[in-house]
Image (cartoon, rainbow, N blue to C red):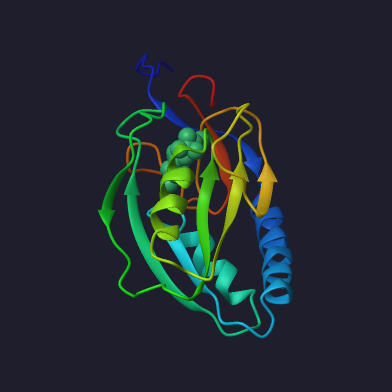
Length: 184
Ligand code: IMP
Ligand code: MG
């Protein structure tokens, strides 16, 4: 049977399985609850990529937390960072004096998180820390993160909130984006 020859990209090899994500998210939740005991942090999810991670993470945290979201865009329909970050929607609450924990899907060059951390620090919070589900090591970086779910190889991944051109966020696992032929 012939398949239309194309270079269409789609989810292929699984990089982080669903069970591994769920287990690690519980561990992160416990660590965060311990570190912030007696405080009431604001978890700031970075839209859209972090919304699934955020939803699972807060349910693994046993202390009181507030939540908010911020919209940033750095990628268009491409698998390469443009290096330009744009604020697409702001927080809905003031964070002055609060302990802020940024929740992000993936750290690559660090451009996005460095920009966001600087922006939030300017609002005089008590503290700003960062929790990322995935860390794709990329040499020198402008930012350090406090909580990391998984360190992954330098491949473009989709699933569990991460998209390619708006698609594949709904996968319950993280997979490498591959050409349709490779992925069979
Ligand atoms: P950075 O600014 O280079 O650290 O890139 C981080 C941002 O790029 C993240 O917020 C993601 O939205 C996006 N990104 C980086 N790598 C991937 C990937 O493998 N899949 C999907 N999005 C990615
Ligand atoms: Mg993102």
